[in-house]
Image (spheres, rainbow, N blue to C red):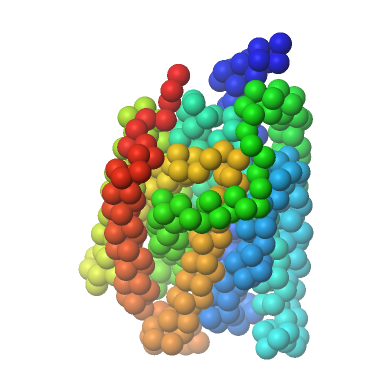
Length: 448
């Protein structure tokens, strides 16, 4: 009887895709808050005298808990131990707490310093660090949810759709953050909107928990997965294929997410886009992924070629950032074209990279494996924005009108190009390792 229940739940497209939409809804609001501050760099400078280095420090705070206190790795172990329901709920609560602190910091001015950091910046950083722990734990939890519900079915497509919905949150943040700030005459207005959305996201995840509870007992009995043991971490970290995916991940994302942090400023300083609309062009990048990531995921499901897709996507990244760095066509439409092409690249690599991990790592170790990959990724997401902010203040300030500061983004874009070159090299090594070990990265995912 239990076997029949499992078939009904796992074979039904309606059930699988309902689960996906519910958990992706939670990630949508998480990604909105992740990027809601991106278009506000110059407004923070005008309102509270934030420097590029302080803005970089704020973005570096993303890794304070995740990277430097290893909390993300611990979260992955907890996920494998207690499951997706309790871990997901805890992640949502952490996001709400962190976002609340971030809102509190930006909604008012503060005097004094904490550990040599201005009080307002420190509180904002602390909130972002707590939020970051929540969103990253939610990310590995949702990834494991999809792996569990879609294994043997449209797994890459499902992951692509989840990423697309999350990226829609990024696009919404990039496009509306500055207009909302100006409309309400408050830098904290878009953060407050996101805070309300996170509360709705928690309710959505609770709905998923009800659905997942009905499935849990029967799936456990039928699958007979060995329980996770702490020593299984050694199995993960001794896997060369795992490390190639992790390094590819950090290099690729270090050339995309930190770029998005500074992209509105790039549009204002190099392409002369009005600051009120500087987030609109960068918003084209995640908008493009909404259709393309599921498309490439579907191709991987049916045709395979996962490693090849990653190589092509990383190669595109190199060419696009090199063109951003080049002193040519400093006009908005050229920046828009490059951003759209970057969205294509940003669709290809994740659509093949994340579904490839279950081909390399056993199911009962997936939470820890994804947590370790996210941990490595967070090293780049923390340090690269700090590096870019430091480079801008140290080497890239050019004369502006009055008290306004303008930046030359040539050096930062060259740095992003270098990350892309290294990503191509690692993707080639991953394809070679797949041929040697037979992971099946070039094979289709669907078995039914």
